[in-house]
Length: 130
Image (cartoon, rainbow, N blue to C red; front, side):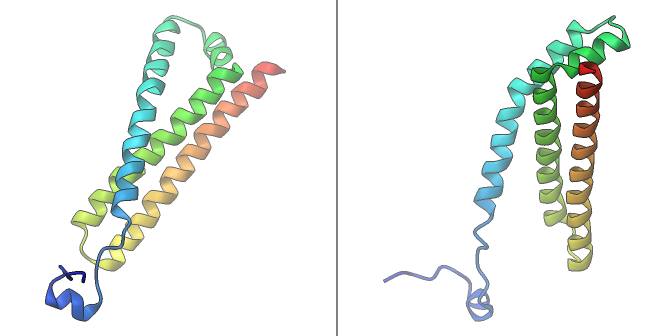
C-alpha cells in the first residue's frame, strides 16, 4: 500500500509533481557538459585567429568542420541559457500571465538568436566555398 506524501490541500486539488523537473535538470547538465569541449575549441580558435584578417577568420569559420562545431556551439549555448532563464522566471515571477509571457519570449528569443547565428555561419561557409 502506497503512502500519499502530498499535503491535504494538494490531495484535494489533485496537485502534485509535474514530473518535468528531472528532465530539465538533466538537459541543463548535458548541455553544460557538451559546451565544455566546444568552448575550449572556440577559445583555441579565437587565440589562433589573433591578428588574422577578416578573410582568414571567415575562411576558418567557413571550413565545414568549424562551421558545424560553431553551429553546435551556438545552438547549445542559446538552449542552455534559455533553460537557465526559464528556472529564474519560474522561481521569481509569480503572476501566471507574466510568467507565461516571459517564458514564451525567452524561448522565442533564444530560438531566433540561434537561427540567426547558424545562418551567419552558413553564409560564411557558402561564401568561402564559392
